[in-house]
Length: 286
Ligand code: SF4
Image (tube, rainbow, N blue to C red):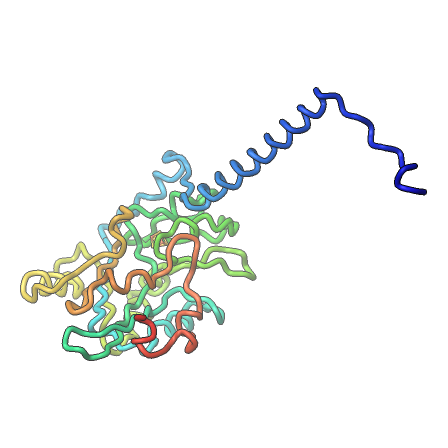
């Protein structure tokens, strides 16, 4: 059959052509609007109505307020806390409940130095993970520790997406949210979290902030009243009121290494330690 003998397409009336054009434009606009909306949605933590999480945000009336002081000047990157945490909580390869963040820098005297900041759930007073969970699985346990109820968690990952510190991962086998719970099972029998007791440099101090004689309270008083060193919370602008405070190397402020800490929608990964990310500081600076 020649091209001339092919049946030409049925002529469209001007009305129909107009309709098809407008419909195409409308569909294109809808697709664009849809993707912009999806992107916006991705960026914004989705919180449940306050009535849904208000009760679970209240800690039990046990008179305790658990918190942490992390001395980044003492941490020398031995990863003992991570190993202890993995052993204690059966954390599989490739996943972390806590991770030590590295940041290489040049001190004011010109020396090269590496700052290490042990990182985990900040046990926020105003925990966005708890507000985001659609199942109602997150709650405040003893001393205000933020915990997951594994009879309820269905692995939606809304908590991971809302956490501004990347402190939650989704277990690929159980499909449930995993995070630091202050080793509650150890606290119940009078022990400290595994990481805190394992740290050989005593960079991690855990305790009851309501107890003026607790080691953490004495340390807080000493550093604030006597030593005058900088103590900071991570990403204060998020309004989460974290229970973890960091003693920061005065020569290297938190703002410099804080971008290494993962944020909303991400978790700690083995990439943080990849030797392929290492290299002379000068190269990284250029
Ligand atoms: Fe929740 Fe993340 Fe805050 Fe921990 S640090 S309480 S996981 S929002």
